[in-house]
Length: 349
Image 1: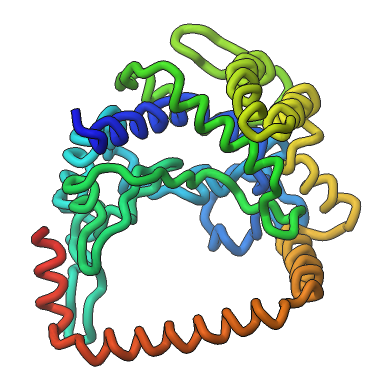
Image 2 (image 1 turned 180 degrees about the vertical axis):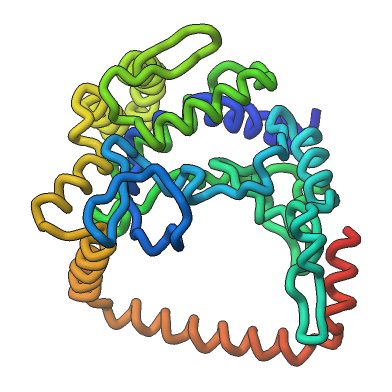
């Protein structure tokens, strides 16, 4: 195979193993155990009330990644296949070209303009909701799936990590180090394909963890075996610990092993997880979810803006602003194609 084929194949090995173990990331770093009641817009639900403005689940880790957040009922039966680049492209292409009855009824265009780009399950590839995606930087006007088909996978995009409102940047160095070790472990692990049955179990396990991940005695399913969150999570961490030891040798310190040890502590004590800490902070402050996260946002803004920029940094950003606006003006002046024709050409790729 070519180097690019080898690279794409390796990335899909990483993706398959990521999906097998991604429930652990939801447990360790999930930071959305609650939501604003206004988000439900009067719809029926089985969430518990924290106060008149906040809904939550007591053992939830990441409601953002549940069917209340980062999902779409229209995509529930897509069955996108992550086993290989060609199967991924094939199943994603089908979704882009398969009409969806509710979208057909809505219509695409009226006298007032476009309601949607087309009436299919996916308007474009980037609408597909997944916890991880293979990516390739596309050329101007090029569809992402065409870029993947022509030039293979360039990098992967991890999408299941919540922004942690307890941290100024939403993520810290220790979490980043752990994610590095986690992803490298996925790359070097079982190259086997994910069967349809295993794919269903992956969805089932993820659903349990986002809604009930910290619940005592919760069990997940691996093949035909029932395992507790600490038991299975500990086994995954043992594999990552071996990777971390190698990465530490390269880095010349113990940053990766320390990151793994910190995650083991969360398995031993669920109260150390961000989701539990957020609920505890809400309880201590007496605030609902929306008020608490707004308070944290203002606190972090003051902290970050108080740092200030050096003269060199400010000059660099000022020049970048000017060049960006100049580039925008040039693009707009050179644009001679109407949107109808552009959209037709884009979708025809």
